[in-house]
Length: 205
Image (cartoon, rainbow, N blue to C red; front, side, top):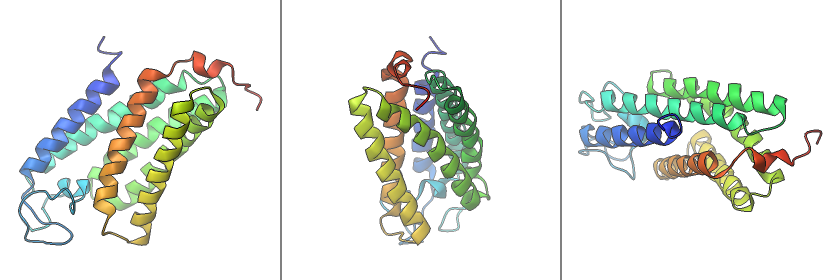
């Protein structure tokens, strides 16, 4: 029972810890360094990880946020390992398993001072894993998930574009939209797809 729902439980714990972290965040955002508390419109989730908040105060949210990131990364790593078992092509299965799950180690390191470079590494590895999953979903008869994967990729790439271009006005909002849509897609793929959905795919193509 616990193993069957480990992904869901991990994500729930992660979200709860991150919510608790937002309640403990002292204040300061990209538009107002003197603001009080966590502003969902203008604060980044990464603001919760620093030793000090944007306003310079000691960040009491950090402990909770790092705990949330541990469960978040572990849950997604389990997803990639378990989903790889549904893919009939051994090469693709290994990429999903090792690159997807491996990227979650670097995702956790986003909560450290290595934040910027870890975002690049973790995002790249995560996208590779999800791209391979999307290819197999597109070849399957999972029509709803075909659209969900495509929409998710567009949202994810747009968020990365904002980050890379320095367009920060809407980036905090898009970060949270990406976070939410990623969780929804991962849970959907974990619970509503099965090995048989991909068995009819010609491994040679």
